[in-house]
Image 1 (cartoon, rainbow, N blue to C red):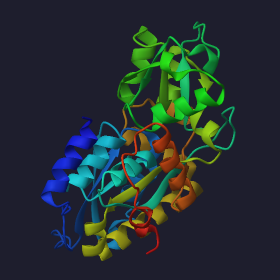
Image 2 (image 1 turned 180 degrees about the horizontal axis):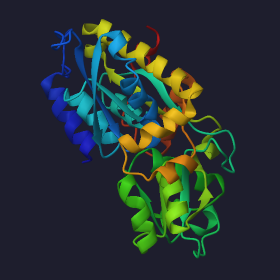
Image 3 (image 1 turned 180 degrees about the vertical axis):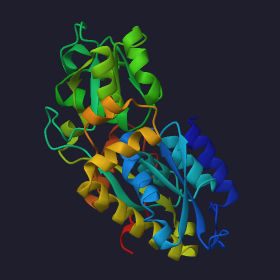
Length: 324
C-alpha cells in the first residue's frame, strides 16, 4: 500500500475532520495560523512570495509552509488533518477522490508549457547525461528512470508519452528518488535518466552537463495543468473565511510574481538550496490561479487508463472550492 493509501485510510476512519475544523482563533498578532504543505520545487515560488510580501497577512492569515517529499505525501497529510492546505499534482487529488476522500481544489498552481519540444516555459523534463546513448523516448526501454513518486503524475505522463509513440512501457524501470537527490543520482550513474522539475532541471544541466530528451507534460497537452492547491470539504465548509483569505492572498502573490519575475526567482534560494547562478538561468513555472475542470477530467482519464483510479471520482466535490 502506498503512503497516500495508508494515510488516507487512517483519515477516513478518523472522519476527515481537518486540522482546524472550524475558524481558528488568531495568534498574538490577530492572524489566523494556517499550515500549507508543499514538495521541494520551484512550483511554490509564488506561495513563498505571498508570505514574503505580506499578501496573506493582508488577508488575516499567518501562513506556515511545510515541505514534504511528494504530492502524494502532501495529499495524505491534508486528508489526515495534519495541515490545512496543500499543493500537489492534480493526479494525486483525483486518486484521493476515487478512494472516497473529500478533497477539493481551491486554486490553480502551475501549468505546463506550450511547446512539446520544450522552451522557456517548460518546467519539467526527462534528462540524461551528456554522454548517454539515450536520444529520445524510443531509447528508454531497458533503462532505469528516476521519478519522485511511483503511481503518480510523472510515471503516468511518461507512460502516456511512450505509448503515444508506440513504445512498450513494460521495459521501462522507474524508481523513486526525491527531486533534490535526482541530479546526483543521474550524475553518479545510479539511474540512466531522471524526470525532474525546475530548478533541478537547470541544476543538472549546468552542474553535470545533463541534457533533456523529452517533455512528457507538454506531450499530454500544451498548458497541462500540473499542480493545484487544495483542502478538504470539511475545512472548506467550516473555515470559509480562511479559505477565501488563502485564495485572495495566493491570487495577489501570483499576479505579483508574474509582474516581478526577478523577485520570484530571488525567493527560490530562500526555500531550496540552489545556487543563485542556477536560479538565474532556470525556467520559471507558469503560475496560475484558475483551474480548468476539463484538465481535472483529463487526469481522471489518465488515472483510469493506468489503473490508479479505483472508483468514481466526485468531480462536483473535487471542484467545489473553485466555484466560491
